[in-house]
Structures are given as structure tokens and as C-alpha cells.
Length: 300
Image (cartoon, rainbow, N blue to C red; front, side):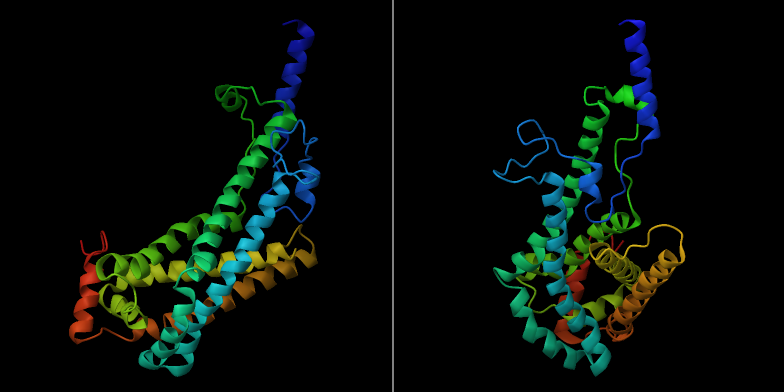
């Protein structure tokens, strides 16, 4: 390598250290401006759709966005059944009636996979794929595709996009949702062949039997979910506060105020009523005890 090539290589490394990737919550249209897609015939990141000028980022962003809209339909029913109705009735037996009436609509095939499983999986996987796409696009743009990982670490090259707070809340929310689904859906299906006997009374029984685990888990689930949902709505509608001006500050307070209000309303019924209803007696309580005894680590 001659002196000129060595100098150019060093300049490339310096520019790579100074240029940060675009944030995960770039406003609509900014991603396409920051990561321009080469022609379909030469781009390794194109989806290969004939006659389309859009790249992978365009479709991945829309998959992530519209999958969240589908899941919101189920979430609305679920929050109404497990929080808002108990808050109004102040009675677990009365609230169970409404839960049993609507449950067949979203806990049956094909609505359950269409409204819950598939949208959640699509939302998570498209978000991960979008991060990988942006990382690959950064490598392509800066000419570091063939640069060994060791060299990138030595030069401290920042090729991965920054993780926003909303994305971070999503990563935290995923295992919380899986744990919730395991206790209330999968566990009854394994040991009882279904979750028809699992309702608000089952949740109340868990709060009374394992208060520390239940309160910690549900407070975390509701708090993180509220933040992710509200900030997600703000992101898709371009309400995310940007900059340090008065308008950005007002938006920041508005979005966070909506998050706190949403979480407080959800907790008022879900924790204030359902969480304080106490244990179930008789054979129902015994069946609940059996299910809770199967949860790993809870009964240690």
C-alpha cells in the first residue's frame, strides 16, 4: 500500500468515528433520506419487489407500525375487561361475566394468533430486522463492510444505530409479556387443557398468595407497557419532542403526562380492585394453588 492509500484509509477511519448512525426514532421520511437505497439491481438490502422504488427500511418500518395497530385492538379489550370494568363494578364476580362474554372472541382460532401472537412477533422481529438493516447500511455507506470486527473495535466505529428509550422499553416489555402469557395462558393449557377456568379470580388469588412477586411483576408490566404504548403512539404520529425549544418541552410533558395518566387508570382497576380481592376458597382455590405451584422459582 503506498503513502496516498494509507492516508486515505486513515481519513476513512476518522470519518467513521465522527459520524453517528441515525436514532431509532427518526421522523417519518428521515430514514430514507439518511440511508438512501441503491438501485434494485445492486443493493443487497432491497426486498426485490418488482416495480417498487422502496427499500427494506420502508417495508420494515410499516410492518412494525401496523402490527402495533392490530395488537392495540386486543389490548383495548383486555384492559377494559381486567381494569376498567372492575373499576366500575368494584366486584370480581360481576366483572368475570364481561370477561367470559368477550374472551371467546380473542382466545379462539384464528383470532388469537391474528390479534395477538402474529402482530407481537411481527412487531418485535421487524424492529430487530430494521436495526440490522440500518447497521448494514452504515457499513455500506462508510465502506467498512469488509473491515474485520477487531479493527472496528480498535477504531471504536459506531455502526449500530442508537437505542431510543422507547425501543429500550420494548426490549424490557417483551419478557414481561412472555411471563404474563406463560402464567395466565400457557400454564393452564399445559395442566388443565385450557384457560377457561382462569380469570380475574385467578389473578386475585396470585396477588394474595405471592404478593411480592405479583405486585412487582404487574407494576412493572403496566408501567413499561404504558410508556411503550403512549410513546409509540407519539412516534407514529410524529409527536416525539425534538430539540430543546418550548414546543419540544410542551410535547415532552404532554407525552409523559399521558403515560402517567394511562398507567394510573390501568392500575386503579387492575391493582386497586383485582389485586386486592383476596384468595379463592374451596376446590377453585385448590386448583389455583396447583397452577401457581408449577411456576418456576415462585415457590422457593
